[in-house]
Length: 362
Image: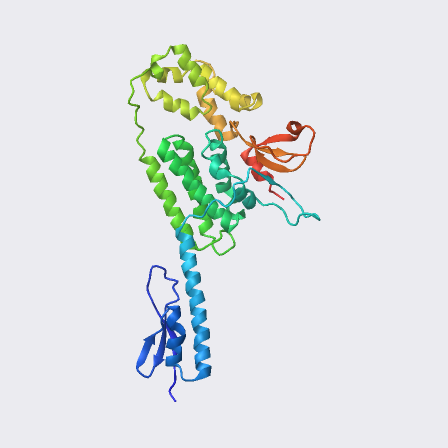
């Protein structure tokens, strides 16, 4: 009676977590166990004379097959894009258990179910979603589930690709990526403490992608239009000033002034900076941060940037999520949610990005 050994030999492949190959020791020496289903039983029966040993080998072979399939599935999930699981236009935000509903709606669940994938393709909602991604990157990533964290990265990649294609909104996305990278640097150090879900190597790979996206954004070359039509500087000065008054970010005004000397003179207009200060900040905040020029006049440009460092700026979006106080449904503005109120419009309030996060703080 000969003794049969069953063991797994190390195997180096693309996935270092591979369970390895299965080998059976026979009288002729070690023989590799085949993964083909048609040969499994025949090969084992030929190698194993003892019935109990045959059953034991069959049990180990089944475990090997299960482990191999799991490793293959994990590798596939890590290398392919996760679909955007839901494309709901509205969700019910429940904060407690009732006879009809159990549990409560979390931030990650709302982020997965609402149709943010289509929202970023809408120019009216793009800035809203980007601001929400930035707020989540600052403090809410650990509160997301593993599925929501993966979905977050997929939506972020879609945002970056959109910016690379149309060459618009480059600066806000740079700031978003920088905020996310700084947050991940601190969170990855606490891996294993229930901070981030998933393998640390996956998050390191995602951080490398963020650095790659930042480099791609830095290398963007804005192409001038081929047509030689009328440009901004061809317009009357009064119209140029009216266009500049539509800019709500002082950094855009500074960038516009760098285009040409004439635009730089207009961008230094005190009235433009005064209106910016009054738009974003209250009179009380302005009085606390007064800055005078050498001539004794208020330096509205310096005051604006100082106020930005001290207080949050006013946020304005073309389209936002809405919350119905009657039926507790969160929905996009152009969606007819199933409301039972007589006057639906009186029950709906606009939800800012920070308000969206506050809805799920229990």
